[in-house]
Length: 286
View (cartoon, rainbow, N blue to C red):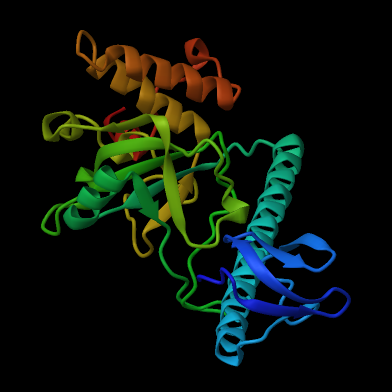
C-alpha cells in the first residue's frame, strides 16, 4: 500500500507526513523530527490516517494480518500438542518395552484370500479384522500379545482344498516401533527389513499344519472361524529354519538367515536347540 506523503496524526506528536513505508515499518516526519513505527500495528492505537478511505483500508489490512497471526498461532499450538502427544506415546512405549514380559505364544497367523495377499505384500501391512461381538463390536481387533519379538504369518488355502493343505505364503516381523497393546486402527506394519513373500512353488513345500497343533485336539486340522490365531514362538522359529533350508544357494539366503537369527535373538531362542516340527501333519506321519 502506497502511503508516501499521506497525512497522519499521532496522540503525542501531532500531525505528520509519511516519508517511508514497507511491510514492517512506517516512518513519519513530525515537527519535532522523524519517528519510526511498526506497520501496520501502530494504526488504530497511536497513529491515524487523515484520509478516512485509507484508514479503512488499513483496518482491513490489520484484520487480515491478525487472522493470519491467529491461524499461525493455532498451527504452532497444534504442532506443540502433537509433539507432546508423540513424546507421551514414546514414553509409554519405552515403559512397555522396559517392562515387557516375553510371552511364549506371541506370534500370529492370518488367513488371507488372494486379494488380501496382494495388498499385504504390496503395502506390507495386515489388518487384524473387526470385533464381531461385545461392547466394542465393529472396532478393530487389538492383538495385545504382539510386540517387537512377534512375527505375522500369512497363510492361505483355496476354497476347494482341504484344511490340511493350508500353505504359508509369506511372513514378516512387526514394525520396529509396533506394540499391539497400543494399536487402535488394527493395521500391523511390517518390519523394514525382516519381511518375505514366498513363491508359489516354495509355498507348496511349507504347510501350516506341519508346525501348528491345537493341543486340546492334536489330531484335528480345523481353522473354523476367525481370520487369525496366536501360536508358539518355537513354531515360528521352526518355520524360519525350514525357509532357510529352502532358500539355500538363492539370492535370499543371507536375508532369511539373518531373519532367523534376529527372530531367535528377540525371542531368546537358540536355533541349534530347536526341536523338529511336531504339528498335526508331522504327528500324523510319525
